[in-house]
Length: 191
Length: 65
Ligand code: SF4
Ligand code: SF4
Ligand code: SF4
Image 1 (cartoon, rainbow over the protein chains, first blue to last red):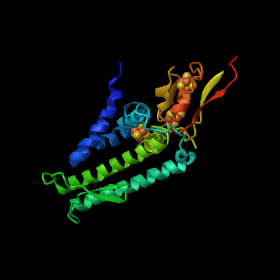
Image 2: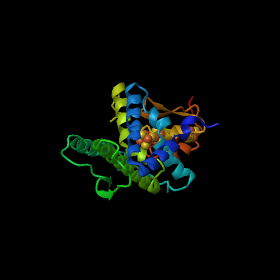
Image 3: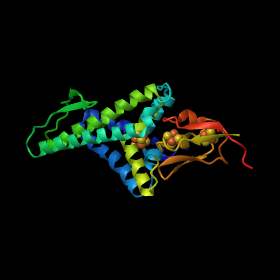
């Protein structure tokens, strides 16, 4: 019998789909940011990655079961500290910029922009959701956050295809953060 | 005897190896790196094939005396 947490890939798939049709569902994704950090902070290590991450399971499923992965080894530099921490720093910078643009909409400096930004560069008009029912900043954050989630999914799918199914987990910013928190908690900096 | 060995400096602690191991020989040490229980490992290489970071390898080891 499979355990309930082995089906969390369904959550990830449903999340991406719901967000596609109604951008406001993007907010639910905050769960995938807060839960792993909290679990590490309370000393549970990387239990989120190890047992509860739907995204990791989804890549595993597509790559292994559906054979969409070429199963090659990832280039060594990707697992190096400088690349993983560098990518984390880049990711957090882009995330902060996104939060700041949400703030600019909140305080009225900017108007809501209904676009999804892929890979931090490609802008796609995304205006099939009626967002007039919520404050513009709530919608702005949803667009920004969904952009982050879609971008990381696309990067993950690309590396899943070229390398091992869960190669995204090698440089996933959440995984790097939870591992760092775990290291700090145990004062065992592995260099 | 052939046993799995982890390059703990570069392990990302994702837990893919632990999930794949048919003998439950691998655990993730406090979310930092993977640890192989050599008493349980049978050297099947499943973890080596699955590790997304390619940092776990099955190598020849002397039998424990
Ligand atoms: S590294 Fe990222 S994608 Fe992989 S299991 Fe952890 S949180 Fe999920
Ligand atoms: S699969 Fe590889 S990177 Fe992940 S925990 Fe095991 S040895 Fe470490
Ligand atoms: S070689 Fe096989 S038995 Fe040994 S740790 Fe890897 S998967 Fe488990």
